Amino acid sequence: MKKIKIVFEKNFLVCAELNDTKIAEEIYNNLPIESSTNLWGEEIYFKIPVKAKNELPTLDVNIGDIGYWPDGTSFCIFFGKTPLSKSENKPVPYSEITVIGKIIFDDEIIKKLKNIKPGSKVILQK
Image (cartoon, rainbow, N blue to C red; front, side, top):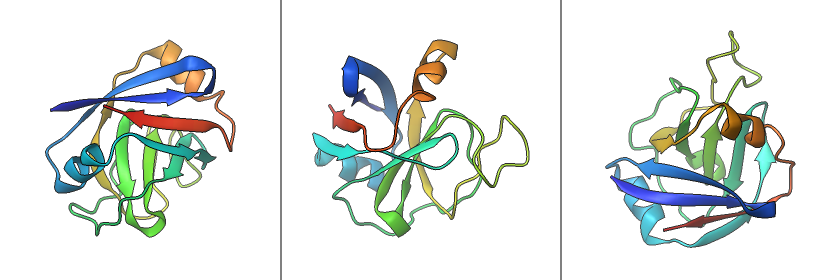
């Protein structure tokens, strides 16, 4: 598993582990990537310069999962309830994504993710 850093404004950092999907490998090979955040409920997503088709399309994600959303060519971080969720602890993506890894998190990280504002700068790094 390859490890990456997700760096937000104000030096807030989240570590993540990528899985062995081709999309995760392609994202890793394109690092560093700088973008600005969007929010959809308790999901942070942002455009990245990687265009790929869904490798393992799913709507089944958990808190802490990171994914690639081909419809928006976006990197997604799921940390809580989204508008399609039926429960507090089960995010549901807007449409199918490929899960590409997981963030390493605790309650403090989740609390900080909930404070990220739309348009915040974010950098993915090796």
